[in-house]
Length: 357
Image (cartoon, rainbow, N blue to C red; front, side, top):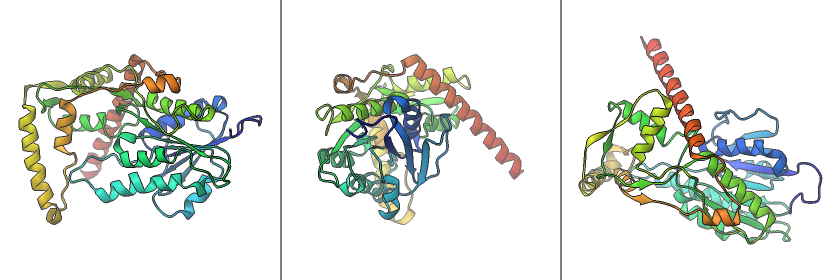
């Protein structure tokens, strides 16, 4: 394996989407385990400039690059030069309606063949771990089918795996709890029950998802039969419950406001039918209005009314994965960050209001 017979740190790893939610957690843990993993350099590649939003150590070990992974190949060559492993976290996770198929295709699919191209990989065994796989099924298939592809030297091979995670929460979240809080702040902090009595959903802390990526990286390095070419579910011990209950828990722990559920609920079939009608009107009118719903209402109704649970047995057996953070620590870390995010948001609003007046 790469660097197996050399002393000192030798590994160079690249995190695509390093400025994002999962990317920041992953970079933080890679820095914390640099000695254990033998890492001499971590590279972050993202379309937006990197900001340390999670509070990891500041070090020259981390190099950041701004580039479009789905763009021209030439600017990417020096970024990939000498890289031993890639954590592919770059993704578009929007669920707007109608979907922006061009953006989803460009970001989630077209960038993946670029990563799999054997000409980017120079020598030694290389490792590619795909993140956000559940929202990028076609990209996941590309990654997994590339397992065992010969590298440029025609002597070594590409080892790949795909990490699948449930709906994720934690520091640097910008799509889940933060969006829910934004919405509830305009609705008197009442969580509407739009899918009948609700379902049960399994959530996972972002720190544990990042740890799952590292476990996959370690497994790919020591064995060619562990999780090579396979998708792996990564979960933790966060309680399985209605999403609204989890939102209430984050609010209570954050001590900024209280969230309650509505005393009424809309039967799932009725809300789904109304959502279908609204989405049909929006789709028909889109060529003229260019208006998109921020979220697919049918998707929200289907998710919140479903019972969704996942099995991490493959990760436990073949990657030696166990959650790094227990449910209480995960909740406390997350709630503190959400509270700080809320305070900063309120301060920004006050500042903007004072400037306008």
